[in-house]
Image (tube, rainbow, N blue to C red; front, side, top):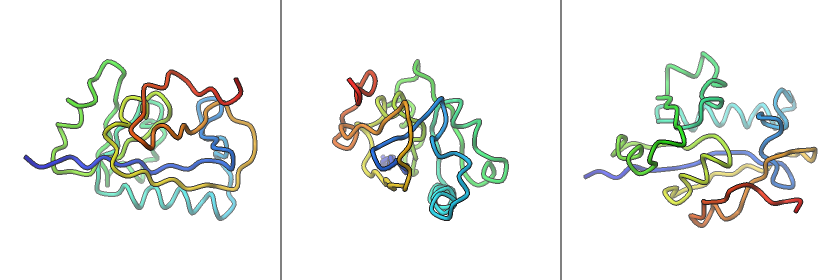
Length: 143
């Protein structure tokens, strides 16, 4: 049986920031580094599957919907069963802490870009995901 290749492509701020109020903290920033990061995300995921929560999937612009398979994941879905549906394909896991907590153990490649953002956030990248961690109930950066 062909194996599903599971990857993540994401961006973090200078201190590991990944979210603020349900969005990317730098969303809307038109500086070249930020624009290039978004363009790269859509280039890298083109032709593949993007599994993510409903908010992330809803945020994919119309121009990018035709050239990748978008699949909404829910906490009630078993990650292993979900990934088996895509045997032989490359699957990118999008989202943030809840989705990466569930899927980190399956990820073979993390493609993380560090952006020049050093502002506020309420969600942080957790290095335990890189070693197949997961099961992180929430980020504890400031505790």
